[in-house]
Amino acid sequence: MNIKTKFNVGDEVYPIRFDDTTGRYEMERITIAEISVITNKTGTHVRYSSKMWGSDSRTESDLFVNHLDCLSACEKKNGVITHGR
Image (tube, rainbow, N blue to C red; front, side, top):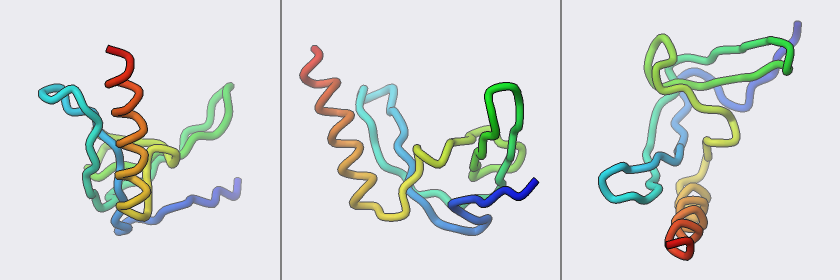
């Protein structure tokens, strides 16, 4: 099996997280500490985590290399929440 990942251990990336206190999506900065590859009936999935044992794992689509792209994605998600209330 030959798996190519978008990110590597040690890369700094920007994920979106939902803040339960404010009810809004926010950007954070993490350093990837672990990469997990999971293969099952639905396919092959790559998950990235800033902690060992994957307690905060995220998919590639949830991570951004550029903080401005991440902020833009947060604004879009927050716009959906704001207009929905």
